[in-house]
Image 1 (cartoon, rainbow, N blue to C red):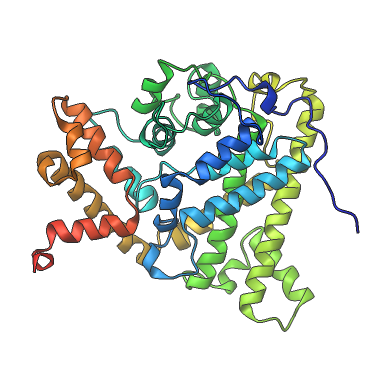
Image 2 (cartoon, rainbow, N blue to C red):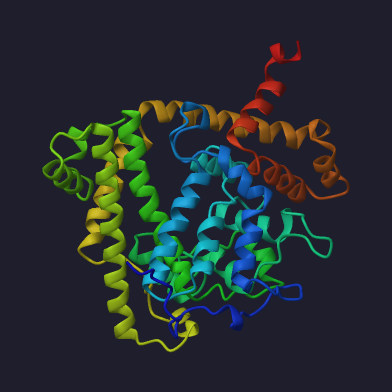
Length: 405
């Protein structure tokens, strides 16, 4: 059996040799492409290591086998590389974007993000994609010549708008199609960065970024089914009537009627991932044939996303998401954890903002001679960077008198 090597890149792929460069000029690596270098810098970042103890759905201490932001990011990267290879795109850029996409998440998942956004309502709000950009361009400090990781334009573009344009007529139209209000105001971190580095926020991103975004959907839908079944928040009997997972379970039972439940779940989830990847590949190939783009810039100015599920797959994915929302994301045990997380994040924010003297010295220094908005942003940066475990420990130290003894 012969090995399969990547085919030459398609005309519409992002090409490292044609990168628009970095904000700060650097000599190029002699052994890696620009996108490989970006990926390596993400993997070696502190923010990436912290994903190990950041929530996906279940808080880290609830079990060793459930996904964290780190394992989720690795699974997204695997799907993204698979799709990029099938479509003859730059696998390294797709992988880099997949690995970086959750760096800006606060502790306790979307619950932590929602509370931080409320706490920052008077100071520009909080958005995890904007926070990812802030981490990559400012908060990571590993180089003498600049703050941040100084990643390529293509990587930064993909991080901030992998879900589509953020401003302009196309962004407003897409929002209306989803039943949402017109494109909201840019988050503060994005607005600040856009003033010095134009990421074309009114266009679509590269195909590699679009792949990373859809790979995120594929990964979390499938691993949340896996985690939910193993955690017992819903049963196989309940899942068997749900599109996609029900079909996969039935087919697996037919092939392996006596298989243990744990293997049945693994086989069914694996089949479902394969079906989703095949669907995206088929639909995207069809759209590319219709569009016939000659460059990555033609992808950016297209009328809509090029990478997507088919019209047959979309309603199935939506029904699966609705099932997971009702049975898992709002399960009473998850709700209890969310309730605790809300209090932890809000109380930490209020305390650090009003009593900066309890902050570590390197963070307290950011308070000196600055406005309330910058003080709030410093507190937000500090809390957003916390892992679940560290946030819980900090809260216990600061709010439980028994911890003084």
